[in-house]
Image (cartoon, rainbow, N blue to C red; front, top):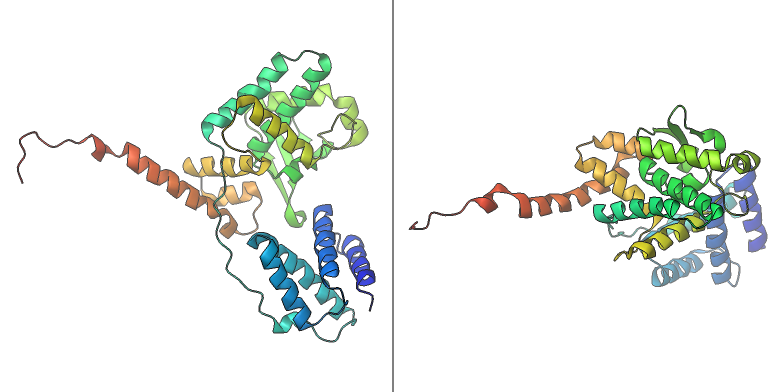
Length: 308
């Protein structure tokens, strides 16, 4: 059996029949190419898979290891389904392991304020019309990241028809093609979205995607990271900021405002509330800080002549 041929066949099956997202296909290609490279004798057996899994643990973080194992498992399940192999060796391999819980990294409110101040300052101080247009687009991207709590891939994949400024809604397609509608109720967010849409109306109509780059193509996730990195440098941030941190920050701040976690789950597009509950750990840290600095007991002093 030519392993690479079967991988190509499986990738084609995932695209044409399962209709998986481009991001999932990209991950499968990377993971299966690595599996193929590791598997020099092109055999699929228990010993080979155990060796591969051990190699993954030696090279990657637990979350990445879990994804890569899942990719290979799905591929081998396909081989069994198509009768290319008789038995699934993963049935006799224990791949479970404890993954450490990583708390979501959030952006301090002071830095969020600095970022928003910077994006609008860039519009006001632009030296040319082109710079001003780009600054308007960047402001719209940042505002929508924070307003919706969407993933950067979801923001970049927005089509023109997904953003209804008059109706004040954004339609987002998340993981597993799950659809959710987020209402935009902040006037400043709506204003910059309208300004952006008016400024780039011709290019948006021609392209079909809502956010576009200088070449009139869909704005990439990497471009958004560069926008944020430039803002990070502009304000002299003491922390590294990623697009996903806007999602974490929005969710955490909503929770701190006593918003029911079930509503936050729907806004973020989580299929399970268990995923959303990670934010309760972050607010526990906030609770600890509040009790440490704001508790009324701190202001209660003993009488000067008190004796036990």
